[in-house]
Length: 177
Image (cartoon, rainbow, N blue to C red; front, side, top):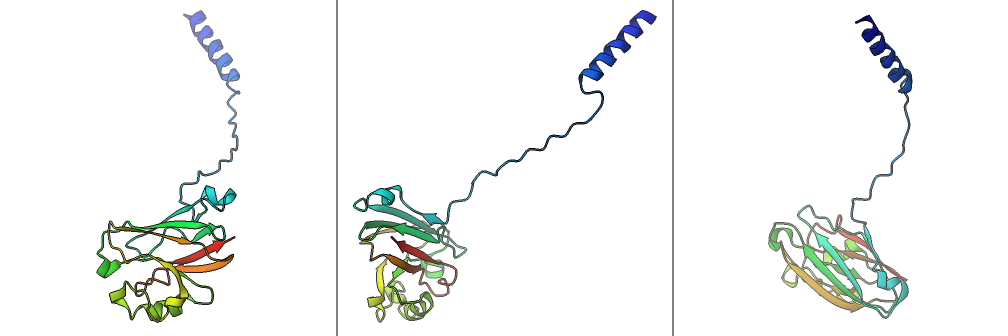
């Protein structure tokens, strides 16, 4: 029995020393988190190489008064097909969204003030129509609207939702290269 206990003890010592002798080794590793969020910029692949291709853009509005994108990039003179969706649950009378692309020189704040007076027109201002390049209709939960237009001259343009009170959070830049 003594020989058996000695053999077990010897085996345990060999195993213990083979495993690092009781020392704890720590190895540092660095991991990069995977990108899980939708980018705030949409640049269609077609726009990077071919100004004649249609830029198909999408933007979503929700019940928290947020657009899922803050920036778009297209080429000057490019055909643009933009689809606005509403992923929320609220009706357009209480949480309606539209998408309005403004001409340079018109601020979202000034346009929103003028548009608030035109609720029967989807909050698209009649008096400021010369300052609008393109716009969708007003939509509610589960709805969408698609518009087509030609990108204006190179520059940076503002877009917004002109439903009363939304423009401050629901706005962004439309960059034409």
